[in-house]
Structures are given as structure tokens and as C-alpha cells.
Image (cartoon, rainbow, N blue to C red; front, side, top):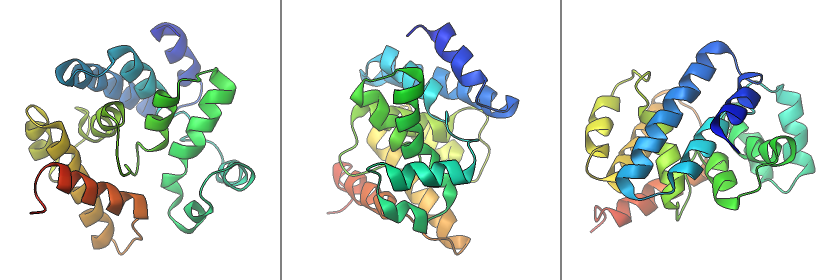
Length: 190
């Protein structure tokens, strides 16, 4: 699917600030993909569609989680997590994107997972560091992303976990698993 068509589909699903975020994630994903040898076209499409389900009604997303083969434990965690895995299913059915790598990177862009692919890492990190993001620690992660994709993803996971813990929120297990896996791949768990 060409960029203009994909953006036109997504623009109808998002509020203007979220659409602008999507453009920045797309640009950042393409940059990271080229830098680290990922498929830039897949990174572009995954980034464009990563928040496709962001504004779907919670009851609709809940129905998708229950009706489809999605982990039911998602319902025990904050609904902000739902738009990733539900969005991947919606993108497949409603936008006709069938590439499993793209769909997986959309599904895990909020949580990460064990064994993240290069494309998963690119989209996960681009969503975290796009230039519109402004929260504690993001500049440090941006700097590390220039030289070390795995370490930057690990730092993003670490910062997300720390933020959730500070707010007394539950942390989805895949986020902990991603953190541990990325720590191992960066040699930090020796």
C-alpha cells in the first residue's frame, strides 16, 4: 500500500494531534529502519497504522479481545494497552494489511515482548522517541538510539516500567519480559 493511501485511511481514525504524532512516528521509524537495516517500507506502514485503533470505543475493543484469540489477561490491565493488539487485527481486516511482521509490530508497540524483531524494535522505539514526545528520560533514549537500538529499547522499557510503578499502575507481563530480554541482549545482565 502506498503512503498516501495509508495515511488517508488512518487520518479518518485519529484526532488531529494523534495523526500528527503518527506522522512523526512514521518519519522516525523510516530513519531508524535505514540506520539499523530494517525494511523501511514495512517500518513506514507499521508506523502509519500503529495507533489505528486508538480511539475505538473501549467496549468495541473489549469485544475484539474476548471474541478473538487475544490474551484475555489484557482486560486486567489499563485499556491503553488494548489498541496495539486489537489494532493489528483491525488493520488486517479493515485496511487489508496482511504482512505478519507489520501486524506484529503494531500489536506489540505499546508493551514490547520477548524476542522483538528488528521491525518491532524500530516501531516501538519510534513511538517512544518521536520529536513531539517530551517527558523525563526521553532525550537520553534519543541520544542512545543514535548508536544502539537494543539499549535504547531497553531504556524505553525501563522508563515505562518506572513510570507505571510510580503511578501505582499494573505493568503488563510482556513489558517486564521485553525489559529482561533486552537487558540480556545488551549484556547488562551479567
